[in-house]
Each structure stands twice: as structure tokens, then as C-alpha cells.
Image (cartoon, one colour):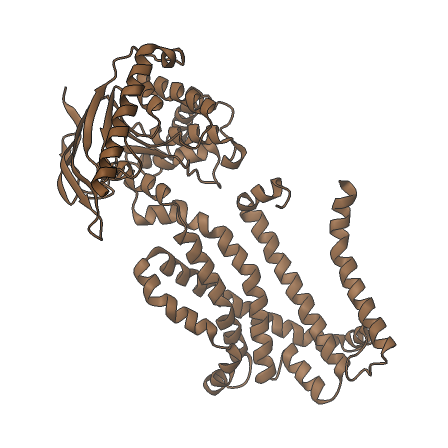
Length: 259
Length: 265
């Protein structure tokens, strides 16, 4: 049992290392040139060589991502509350929200540039636009799936709508909310990198675009690696927050051995 | 005796015009334990909603405690087949929920926390849940969750307890155990109780009066007085008198179902 648990902690690292080794071997075996698909060893060298600019641009991307994400949390929660607690708002807004979510956000970036110019603002807004939807939907789902019997119990006690929302609705939607945060924060990353690639003069997306136009393919991959790493870190940061705050919602499955 | 709950020729039609109940009249005295049985789909759960004011009748009158019911009751405790405990609260925390909503407890709760805590612990102890106050619902068995749910329905000392198949999902042994628990609490406090159930033995074991409802649209077709001595025990269920009552109810339900089948054919 103990060895199995240890295996579970080692596995993700083993898989990552294994993938890099495989990648390296394939590139060497097929003699793939570095300007097509650089070997991981070359990419790592690029990471070290360009550590300064990578750090600078990555921290800018992190900044735009987190600002856009924070806006998305605020708007998503408010929207989710409105949609989840009123069937009227639900029927009115849901089709619009679905339609909006179907629009590829990359198509909106040029519009944002016209409105706000090239730079940080379009990146923040793209991150926001791409990530508020899952938050709103999850909060709304948490509120809307309240057991009717429980609502009856509370109403027969004379509970107001506000009572029900505060005592039951909000705590109940917390696991949904936190589950959506992990998804939303990685989406926010996608949003800001897209915007940086299309219209910015700063950020990791911009850096990658510049590098590819100068045929510095290893640097492009170094950028991708950094983005992936940041995404993983943020995802697990929010997963940890989720476990700490709403452990009651997942304990059941832990007891069942993950089934 | 003065009726505490009185339904007078109540009719309830749902949106589509389907009649859930029609001509439903019954009266339950203060402190009485009434059970309502009937074939499935006879509007038993509708009766719950009508009495607690969660649904207004299309026509007819619902009177509880001398007042015409218009809107949710505020004095009722309810428990369902599904215990619906809040998973993020401990058993004790779940019991506190009604106190956080119902006046005057709501205003007093913060100042008199210790007294309310003691009251909740005593109630839990009376249903055999002493020592489980700090457990979360998912750490309790189904029967224990149902006991806790019953306590939650009683903590604010309601004058009216409404039970909708509260023991329906439990195994036979746990169910019989909980009959005794409920009977004990009821004999101590004598709140008016309306129990909706499919289980005829349960109805005879617990109730003073059993109402039999017809198929949809539901109405009361007969009323049985159960004058078996209390406290009733498991032994009581094996007496010929008990058997005779259950048998009579069973026959009645069969008749009701048959009439319904002929009505639709």
C-alpha cells in the first residue's frame, strides 16, 4: 500500500521526464533540425540563456492573467448568483451567455485593440472574457441544484430567499466555484497569451512571436515550456485552495479510494 | 377536541389542469399523531405542501392552529425520505440550522449559544446520537442521518411535525428501531404529527388515526382509529389486533386501487 502511494507521487515526474527523453531520442534518431523541432536539451539551454527576458515577459503575462482572472472571478460570481437564484434571469441570460462563449476570443482581440490600443489592456480583457464563463456556470449550477426537499424544510421554517442563499446556496456552490477556478485560471492564461501574440509589445506571447519571426525556434519552445509550467503551478495552487476550503465535498470519494 | 389541522374540501390543480387532490377533507386534533396512507401517486406529498403552506390550494380551505394558511407556515418541522443534511456542517451544526432561521431563537442564538447547544445535545441523546455531535453527515449511517434529520425537524419545538416517508429508504430493522425512537419523542412532547407513508405497519404502529387516500385525484376515503395502548413495542406488531388493523388497511388500499383501475379502463 505504501509503495503504491509512493509510486503515485513519483508517477507524474516520471512521465514528464519520460516524455522529454522520448522527445530527445526521436529528434536525434530522425535527425530533426533544431529550427523545426528543437530537442529538449536545446530548449533547456535556451531557457537558461534567455532567463532574463523570459522572466521579465513571463511575469508580465502572469500579471495580466491574474488581473483578468480576478475580474473574471468577480463578474463570474455575480453573474452565477443572478443566473442561479432567479429562473427569470436564467431563461433570459443563458442563451446569450452560451452564444458569447462560442465566439473564439481571438476574434475579439482586434476589436479590443481598436478600443484600447496595443498593450496590456486587451490582454487583461481577453483573459477576463475567456475565463468568466466557467465560473458563472459553476456557481449557477451549485445554486440551481439545491435539493427541493431542503428548500421545503427551510421555507416551512419561514426562511427568506436571502436566508436560503446564505445558509445553503452559497456554501453549497463553493465546491463548484473552486472547481471552476482551476479551469478558469488556465483559460485566463490562454487568453492573455493569445492577446499578447496578436497585439502587444510585452509578455511571453509577444516574446514567442518575436522569436519565431527571427527563427529562434528553441526560444519559442522555451516560452511554451514556461507557459506550461506557470499553468501547472497555478492549477495546483487553486486545487490546493479547493481541498482546504471544501474538503467536505470530496472526502466521500477519498474514502471510497478515489472511485 | 379542537382540530389543529383542518382541510375542508381542498382541491389542487397543477399548471396543466391535472387534479392532484379534489374534495380532500381531514382534521387532526392538537397533539394527535395522524398517518396518511394510500396508493402511490395519490397526492400524499401534495398534502404535505398544502398543510405547510408551501402550495396554496386552488379552492377549499386549509386551517392550521386556528388560522387560514396563506404562505409558508413558520411553525412546522419537516423531514423527508432523503435526510438532506448539510454536508459541510457537523451533526450539531445541522441541528442549529432551524434556530438560525426561526424567531425568536434567531435573535437569541448568539447570546444563548451554550443553552441552545445543551438543548441540541439533549435532543440528539434522546434519539441515541449522543457522542455523534461532532461528526459530519457522511460519517453517519443512513439510520443515524435520519435520526439527525428528525432532530433538525424538532429542535425549534414546532407545534406541527410533517413527515414524508421519513424511514422509506432504511432497512427493516433500522426502520422499526426508529419507530420506537419517534414514538418516545412524540410521547414526551406531544406535537401534532402528520406522517405520510407507504408502510401500513408503520402507520398502525405510530398513529392515533390513519387516513386512507384514494388514487388521484386524492381524497380521504376512510379513517381508522388505532386505539392500541402506548407505548407500542415490537411485540405489539405481532398481536392479532395489530394484524387485523394492518389487514383492514391493506384491503382498503386494494379496493381503492381497483376502483382507480376501473375508472381509467
